[in-house]
Length: 141
Image 1 (tube, rainbow, N blue to C red):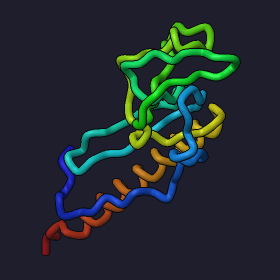
Image 2: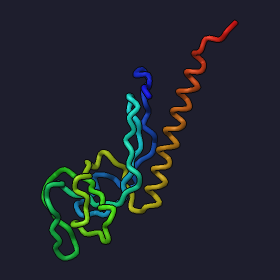
Image 3: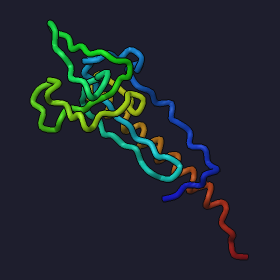
């Protein structure tokens, strides 16, 4: 599906329940995303539980009850589907993404609500595009 490049896709007023700047390495969060670019490609991440890390190439070190690591850039790394605990050894490191690519919450239900709201926004936007195109049709006399 190719959308008209003249159309500006508006970002929904849907935001993370957690401020990205407040995320720290070792935080356990839920992440999701659903959006379409002008070419029609969908970026989607169903609600997924994972951990915030500073650098996906570094392993977290547990000291006391905290995970620490050095670095500036924050990444979200989901837990493996087979994970049985929230341990860094259970992270799917190959699936790491920057924190800018996701919306974050502390609970699964909040993440589901945001994900569904993003899909509903997408459906409304596409419906508006279809309605606008319908008006452009030439009618028989």
